[in-house]
Image (cartoon, rainbow, N blue to C red; front, side, top):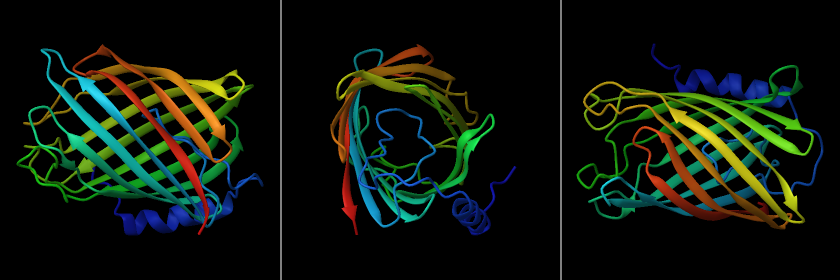
Length: 259
């Protein structure tokens, strides 16, 4: 099945977001999506800017290692509508260090406190072939991804459930033409400004020359709410199944205020 082009998705995302405006809250409060693979259904307040970034050290079987430093700028466009600009600094095993393929996306909040789905958002992302492929930094493909996001508050515990699908151009030599993911992420308070985050996530197996075996992994670690506009995180990633490397990560998110 071919993914719907962004020109078709955009009007639906805009209409849904504007129809499901979020309740008033402090627009300076950070909306951290780090450190988990999952994202939540909430968006940055209109006109506000948030920056998230961090670093991850991956250790593969056999002693090979790689590093990744993901960064995302989030801009609130309207109530329930957020623009994302993504870039990753990569050092793949055996490769050189550089910036990977750039991506941009829209997250639209379409439901709030709905039965079963809770707070529900749809995120559409386009990844462009901006990085060189010879060094292992880029895929040489254009990817269109659609992510369905369901968030719930279970007392003091937050739960975020994601299901996503990506379709890419190309022959499947450097990156599989289609892939998917699922996540279940949880977080909550521990003591004062210190909290915790834990997630189990999976990437089902892919086909083609660049196909990979299924992956299931567990992520967990502490979080720190240093200020209402500043938060930090750190932790470990442990493989449960497949070729997921063991990893340590650390990073943070800051709300820069209104444009």
